[in-house]
Image (cartoon, rainbow, N blue to C red; front, side, top):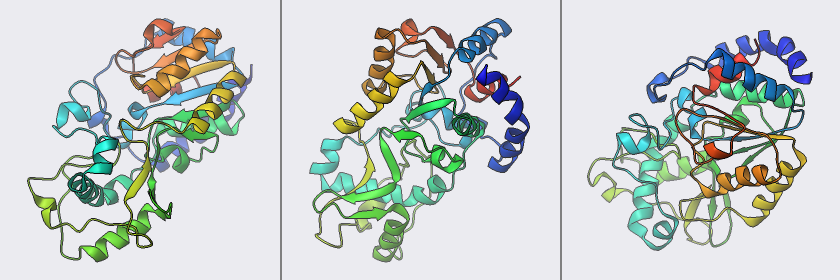
Length: 309
């Protein structure tokens, strides 16, 4: 089968790529039990039967790169911090919320933008290069799939490396905005305490009160990162596009996601309704466990790497 040939051909190359991507950051990875031999064998057998794979990834695949997920017990963002994700309506309607958001994002940017892909990203990139992944959908805004080289990927919730004006639609790179903010705030400083999956960070008290919030230099409009906030809808054209890619695939693999967000759970449910095999690898339960053909509750990179053995 295609997958067996692919695995033997690229296993050695992947080892070199793992060295390039550096050591994994285990402090954000939840505790887990290694996958059993029988369930791994069943998982691999099901993978072997697919030639055009549709992949969904979530924050759980980036924990080994040093970015926490939201929901994991003990190590997720919600467990480590009182900070909750910004709601879209609050960002639009409250200048104080926007100022605090951009202050936190400004402080976190250097760390967030320097994070490197890990073994899971490398494996998925090689699967794509060898024609096995038909399409990939990620909930992550960290751009790590693109950094790893993946191209057949839709960033369902946007990308933290882009910024737009919601009035005139002027586009910025996030790096360009960083320089702009620095010029506005030459003496303002704060330290990163705890990074979030969307590049947000904690700040103590009223540290942001003297922070000058960036606005569009063209129309003075509101600047927003090119990500889908909580309470904001994924663009309908994006929804239709990924649904079409799913219909063209012959199986679905969800990795590192609890599938709590409706936009991705809906894709799994569609796959279930049209009788495509569904594989899930995630530490802990997911919203779609009852729909899965096979569910493995273990470390993503270890399970995927085992598929090469």
